Length: 300
Image (cartoon, rainbow, N blue to C red; front, side, top):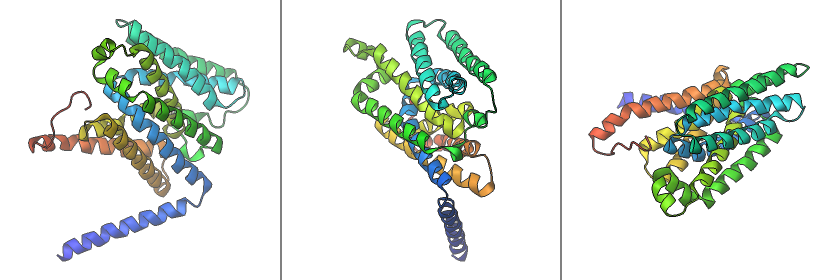
């Protein structure tokens, strides 16, 4: 009894310390901006990441993420906000990759890989041609959630509203093309148009995540929460909600750890998410043995 009481008091003490640290950190504007950015990004990742996992289009999502670097180069070269350049470039690349994926089945992966490389190359060359010191360039590659400015938060909020609006308006159609595209075609659902809309939403999400964990780790935050949620729930709305909640939890915990231990925020967030994924995956066989769940190849 005494052992259990001591353990409870120890956990309670640790929680109090964590809360005090968070309250202390939130006194700074950059931490409040970072927390808000994490929430906005997590909502988008939860919704779009679920569609990415269910439709098994992680590769094309990675292609869009890396091609977005071309837009960053455009922003530096022509002296405007690189985030706006990334949105424009990622959108064009997403539509092109989506069209290739739908129309060129045999060599789609090769063509998408080439477009991925070309986008990165354009960004690198344009940045090389840009005069002056590029102070925040590394933040787009590796993320810098602690340096997200107010104007980027406004852009994130607008992108969140667009993404949520898309999914609310076309949820049934997206559900149909995700789980039974043949049935969707027979019901005269515009599958190609919806698919292009989906990859466009992926492009918007990628640009948001870029500011938090960087282009290099975009796919991790886009897919890990959705993959975990797919291991615990089956219905797509539930997956989206749980994935968004998990994303918010991962970014908040990662921020707290990075602040407390003086670590890189983006990498810490991904490690927290990765640890949660490994734990969730490890206990799935135990849950199946107890007969509580059935394997779901489509969502897990």
